Image (cartoon, rainbow, N blue to C red; front, side, top):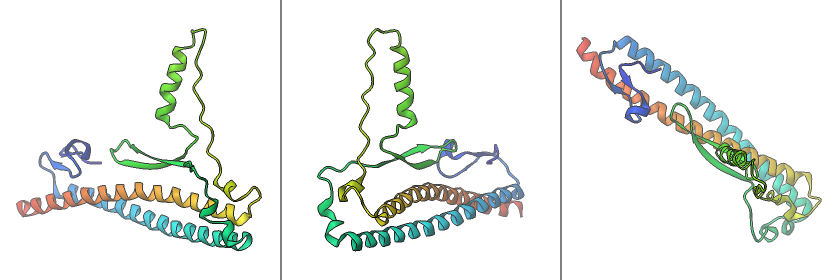
Length: 201
């Protein structure tokens, strides 16, 4: 946590601003805490990157097996629907610490921002004799149906691998935002420590 002598990121931008005297040992302890968190985030990012590469490789390998089983011309752009609908949506939200978080939801699911006003509007209309019901959008069609009804298991496995990879990519984006913020915070503290050390000497 940043002490009262320093302004937080939300108040003064990406780097902490000095407000008053602070002992160098306390500043070093704060830098150590930020550095440990930064190293943990980097380690987690590397693990998710390795998992993402593995999911993508599995997806392409399963897709190749499906093409071998069904025929190269049976799994390709010629089978794509004329009108494609997204299966998932990517959203960004601001966490309590002010950092952006990236998350993935299914296209048929509602976000919390969409559910709240809708429920409140239905409660206000409760006393009316005729309550217009909200139109429910049809669920997106499974892209696997483009290639037939009974598709091989390898094609379903490829779809699952790419979906997992998409979730991992969103997690990596959130981690990268937090890592960039941590580097900025650490750089600001290092600059202030350089200014304090000559004065203390």
